[in-house]
Image: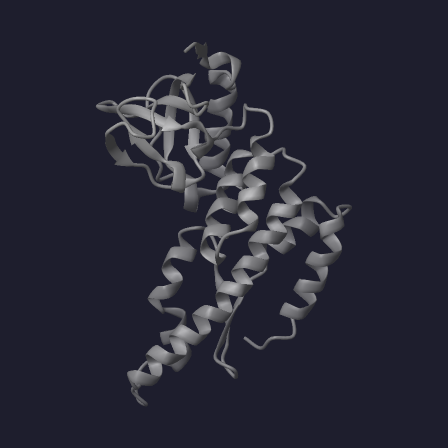
Amino acid sequence: MLTSRVSRQFASHTAVAAIVLFAATAFPTSAQKKRVPPGGNIAVIADERLAALRVAPSLSARLIRRLSRGRFVSVRATRRNQEGISFSHVVVTRRTSGWVQSEALVTSGRNGDDQRLAHLIGGTDEFDRIARARIFLDHFPRSPLRPKVLLALGDAAEEAAAQLSREATRRFERREIPIDGAPEYSYYLNYNGLDRYNRQGVTFTFDRATKQFHYDGAAWREILRKDSDSPEAAEAKKRLEKLATYRR
């Protein structure tokens, strides 16, 4: 088994540092809290289903821990085992390192990773699509696929809004809201089901008449602002026009 040098598959330290800086400044809600491990070339966990950190490059090797989606790791080497599975040796913290299946990782310096991550966004539930779209937007600022991913993020957020509306209504029906207390809509906008979306930089408006959440449309507006000539721009405009019909 041959170990290929990391420089053949990943970007230089300078390029990676630029992407990490971009993520930390452009998307503070999702990136500033993440710690970057020392040394190596930085990658991020995009497919948590494959993100088992092991003591050796084998699917049967002892598990050290499971890495969460969005986690930064420092890649030191790659190796393809006898079964043809590619593994990356990664540093997670100063005291923790191991081997993880390479397909769990994406990095802006590896050709095709933006396409691979964009494909992952398509077949998951609403929150997973949003979380993976956020990773994409943080780490591939120059990808031509950004309008497509922004549209997908917005559509996933609006689908999530419908589910959140049903959940919040059931919850507040069971627990009566005091008539002489805080305004009813403030209970909805403080609903804890919104929290994990907020941490992904996704916020919702609330239609008081219908008691329905709706996505605020930020991703769609970004398409019109930065990619007005893209095929996705026309779709984004339609969605914003529909959003404007809802009462606040």
